[in-house]
Image 1 (tube, one colour):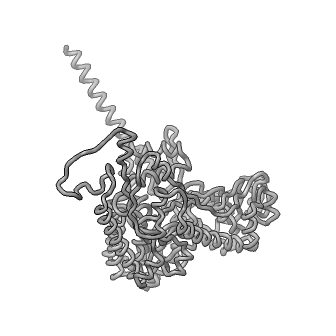
Image 2 (cartoon, one colour):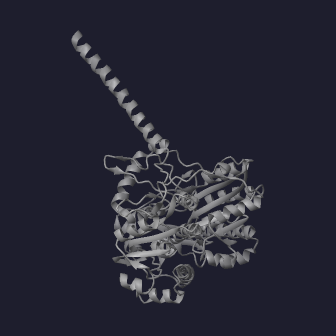
Length: 589
């Protein structure tokens, strides 16, 4: 028996020691990865190098704070990606870097909105002012990729490749027929002739007001698209329109004939030209650094400046609560604005908005902090791909609003949807409902029966009230009459160019323009840029919601480019309360 207990005791000690050893090794592994990734795998280029840019991943507003970005384990690969903030910073620094001779733009498609592409495109145009070259090559150019590549000194296409150049289009999906088959009635309460977010549930085609607004903002975006390509390629805009309208660019030779590209080359020929431009022997490897690896030199002067400008990122759907880096939680963003307001070192604030809207209540919570902050220091808004509905709500109190010509904004309107699923439950599933209540409105909002006339009146009055509040706050912020805001509101969506014309924005410009404006208004020239809110700590994040992250990873792998539609469906299911939300999710390819 002694031997038995001795054996059991020894086994227990061995197990405990092994457990602690594995635990220590795991901690060491994590610390090692964090330590090695702390430099983000960045490298400093040697002389006569080129910067290689492909951007073959979704471009977010700012780079994820992820020390495991390049870590590969058991077949789970992570690729280093950059947010728009670091892409722009790297291009700005490369412009001044004597080791960088030029840029090799190797872009086929871009998972980014038009305004994001515009920011990068303008940064490339600025890069060329240094006298350095940009050479673009691809086997296939989507329209967004070609728009970016068109700024290059030389644009090359694979001899068997293609350019997608057909013009822009918008298509909506309508669910009315499916809901009728399921015997589900979408009970709509809204304000706004153009507030078409509800149309898919009650119509089988676009309403005329919706068709009018889509034609208008899409036409405005397309006009800018053609104008900028015309300037870069020195091809008349009318010619470009004709090429797209008649689908004349059907093969690589057509692209060359119509001056869409400068030559048809294979990749090895392009690499030889890059070697020639950098003075590299053709027998040697080209010296290059990817934009993801590039390490911009720190600006010591800016880093030591006592004055600060706070850059607050508001990205994603607007919801109540904390939210995260991909959603605008009213608590988190309002706290960030408040923190920047209370910091005496922060002399001005730039709110970067990239949001289709969401909860009207959550939007109002953030709006309140904007109003309070405006009383004590300058507040400037920079709009990204979309800043509409609730996204415009949180922006309207700013001293000044900047947008890109192809930003989607406006959509000042409010709606609510309550499904009546009584017949679906009864006729399709054989389920009926019964119950008791202490008052006639105690079960208002239930999906098990239709709204009564009295209930519909109550909800409509509340929606009207939210719309009236929305338009009044926009009127106050923009120094317009409420009747005027109502005339350009009604849920109508505008491009940035149109918004400038009707007074919803003050200037067309990028995020740097907004920051420069904030500095000027604060009367400072030497300042440090600080970002809010703090990004989620990667180590804390690693041990939180692991199951959800694994599911998301596999879902992304399975769905690929279609993952965005899964996210949109999940977001729609989780909607609650009165919504101030744009009716579109716009992608440009």
